[in-house]
Image 1 (cartoon, rainbow, N blue to C red):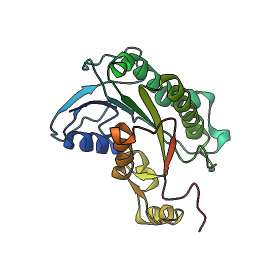
Image 2: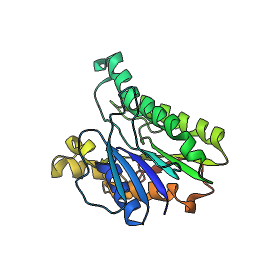
Image 3: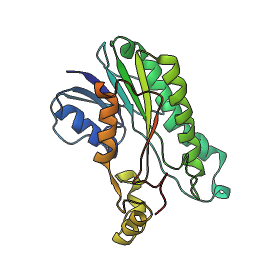
Length: 231
């Protein structure tokens, strides 16, 4: 049994990842900010935490084998309508939040013989899309952080990031609120489907596991082919 920490484990991809890790027999420590995890899962320790708050107060084991940071936001609008504060708030949630937690638990990760970190980016960083300036800016920072930390923390701690396209989660609900929107978004992808939370969680679980022991410093697209294919 291994110990994993999932920040933002009560919704979407984080919730799917918590379920998969616990069902595989691991001890999972998961946090939520607003929505509690309402499923009764084995080996699950649930704690409340707001990643924007100054202090981190978590009860964790001495050894943590893997860490996934899942909180995110999707604000899409023309660049001229964003304020500098919009960018700052998004950066606080997605970049500063991940930095604070990782610094807090770094001794726990180093206590493991091998450990892994998974961050989340977006396909919009390396494939430009209209109206994605805010999310691409903060997630672009995540991609840079991923590679820098992968170099600095090797060989004991692996660091990777997943870059999904639009996924059927509560975070993206307003963009997939009707069958027409779902169909239109699906058609943009070569695989002609919308990603599901479990599709992304599958890759996250793999990257956290020993099966990915020779993978670090990578930004892995899980995006229905939209970033690389034109059909």
